[in-house]
Image (cartoon, rainbow, N blue to C red):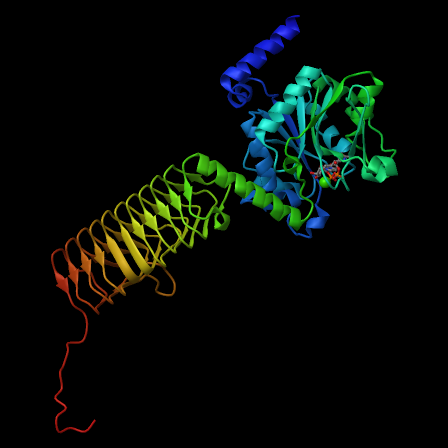
Length: 479
Ligand code: UD1
Ligand code: CA
C-alpha cells in the first residue's frame, strides 16, 4: 500500500509540475558509465569515432550533454582507442577509466567496477549513440523504478534489425528474458524487430556483484554486457525493456552515412527548439546551427546561413542571407548580410555587409557600419564609426565616430612584425589612403584622399601626402 501511495504521489506531482521539471530535478540516478573505447573501424578515419562531430559537437560530448540534462553527477567514461586524444576533447567533467584491450561491452563496464556502489543505480550508455533525449531516459527510469528491475534495457522497434542484439521477451509477462547478438541468433530470432539500443539502467548492487561473472563463450569470443539479462533471470530477479517511442533516437553511429543522418536529426531538433523559443527562420532547410549556439528571441534568420561553435546572438538581429558566423558574440538589433564572421565580437545596432569579413579579434562596438568588401582583423571599432566600403583594417584602434573612406588600408605588416594604427575619436580618413603603421591619426584630424601616411597627424590637422596635381596644356604639343 505504501509503495502504491508513493507511485500515486509521484504521478500526481509529475502531472502538476510536468515530467521534465520534476524528474530532471529530483529523480534521475546520479551515476553513468559511457562506453567509448572502440576504434570505429567503419568510419575509415584517423580520428577516433566518438570525436567525430554531429551538428558541430563531438559525438561523445553530445552524449555527455544529455547526461548533464538529466543531472547525472558522476560520469565514468571508458576510453581505450586514442584515449588521451579523446580525453582532451571532453567538454564535461568525467572520470576516465582505461580499457586497454577491447574485449567486449561487458569487459568495458568491468573497468569501471571500482566506481560502482551497492544501492546506487547506474545508467550505461554508448558514446556513439548521440540522439537520445533526456525525456526518454527519464521515462525509462520511471519504468525501471516501477518494475523494480535490476536491469532495464532501452529497446527500439525497427524495420531493419540487422547488426543489433535482439530482445527476447517472456511470452507471459513481457519481461526481457535475454538479448541475443546477431552472430549468435537463430534464424527465428533474427526475425525479431525489437533491438537493444545499447543503453541500460542497472541496479548498482546487481551490477557490482555480477559484472565480473560474465563469460566469453559466444560467437565473437567477447564479454557481452547483454549477458547480464540472462544472469538476472537465472537469479529470479526482475528485468524490463523500455521501448523508445521514436526509434530514431537509438541510431548508433558506425559509418559516415549514419554520422550525417544523426547530424541532420540534431540540426532539425535544434532549429525546432529555437523556433519554439521565438527565433524566425525564412527557410530552415537551408540553415545550419550548431548545438552550442545560443540565439535570443525575435532574431530572424534568412536562407543559407551557418552559425557555428560557441556563438551567441542577441535579440532582433537579422542574419543573412548567405552568412557564416563561427565562435563569435553578436549583440542585439544588428543587420548582417552575406558576411563571414569568425572569433569576433559585435555590439548592438550595427550594420554589416554585404560581403564583409570580420576576422579573429575584430571587435565592433555599437552603431558601427561595416559595409561591402571590408575586412577587419584584430581591431576595435568604436561607437558610431563607419567603414562603409572596400577597406582593410588590421591591428587598429578606432575611436568613436570615425569615418574610414573607401579604399583605406592599414599597412600593418613590415614583413616581420605587425604594427598598430590608431584613429582617434572623430577623425576622418579620406578615400584610398594608406596608413603605414605604427601611426596615429589624432582626435578630429583629417587625412586627404589618396595620401600615404607614414607619420602621426596631430589633433585638428589636415594631412595630405601625395604628389601635387599639375595640369599640363597639351595644345600644340605632341605626346
Ligand atoms: C552492442 C550490443 C548490441 C546492441 C548494440 C547497439 C553487446 C554485446 N551488444 O553491439 O546488443 O544492439 O550495441 O548499438 O553489448 N565498446 C567498448 N569496449 C569494448 C567494446 C565496445 O568501449 O570492448 C564500446 C564501443 O566503443 C561503443 C559501444 O561500446 O561505443 C558499443 O560497442 P559495439 O562494438 O559497437 O557493440 P555492438 O557490436 O554494436
Ligand atoms: Ca555499434
